[in-house]
Length: 482
Image 1 (cartoon, rainbow, N blue to C red):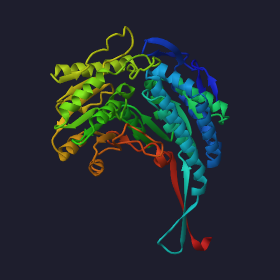
Image 2: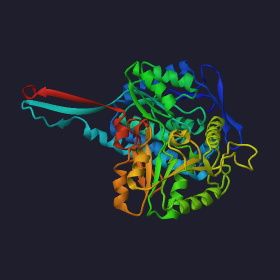
Image 3: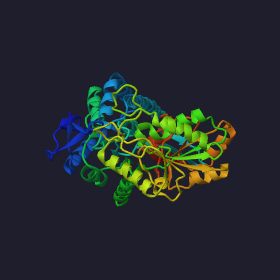
Image 4: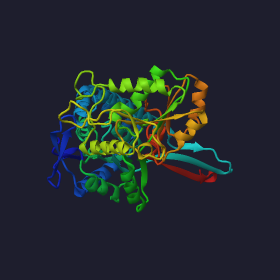
């Protein structure tokens, strides 16, 4: 299937005949050549989705929920193969890829349930203060939607978008990242296997400049949901502004981790490492700004240095590997550029700072920690998207909150404290969409995902994720006419 596109329920050749090389980031070897779509292919995919919308939008929520559950079961049955495919393409340890697949399954099941509840929500009566009138509400699918997903969490962000879109009754065109398309293409085969009607899901691989631009500019697309960088998000937003189309953006982050003076240092060390080095730091929610109370900073940094240097780097399939390579050469170069910039600025390096030793090939970077980083440094303010942690100390709760909120972004945050009341008080003052207290970054499908400020527009997951693909209609009439 890699040399074709999934359009109108079938695998078809790309009109351009061109391909894109897919790389294993641990070995730098080409592992596949995928068909490269073009604007003509996007036009075909949107046409197929538009034709399918006529029928799919009129199916009941219960019918759509049954399809979503069937997809969840197919993913479950092939979970190990999907995880291996994801790891080989993305580079993340197999243990992390398995978590991704479990996340996707939970998301499909969750939105199957919400789809099944939609029927009972239709034509709901709306109480009116004005006498003599009656009003009711309906929830109707937005139309044909374009979904653009990133390379850092293949199959996960796809589930976060595709499942609620289908639950709502939308049809769609999915553009996977050209860097990690392999596991996303499996969704086409899964759709075929469960008998999903042709045209409901269409998958077109290709570059952002060709496929992505054509998708956002297409007149028959009702809405775009994009996850990725702020730079590209701004381009998407500008394109849709010209058409006044629906838009959801999940963009960057520069999330803080606040460690209070009463924190358990061993637990704090584990949670800090998970927040910055999971997926090699390639997370929009990475807690890459570490704020530590000055009274415990020396002891915590000693533990953190030792634990960081003990992390095992390696190929995704190697036993005991805790961190893989960066996913692409471009991202490797970007992250190394920030590290070199930090060193040029004279920042204090606690550990790391180099291409990982012992790897002749692969995009491996040592987990890196800078301390006493000035708040005006690019490393403190800009999203690096790699295994680079910046540390500052604080002396009071108020100062910690001020430093945490002093950011252009507001996606996520972490708080570590043994005082629950204090942690809750701080959480309520942080400007972020999702906050974890004494926890790793657990994201459940029932909760929301999205951020404040430049971290995006709208929310994914939870009922908010479904609402993003629904239009609200009210029908009002005089009682005398009933």
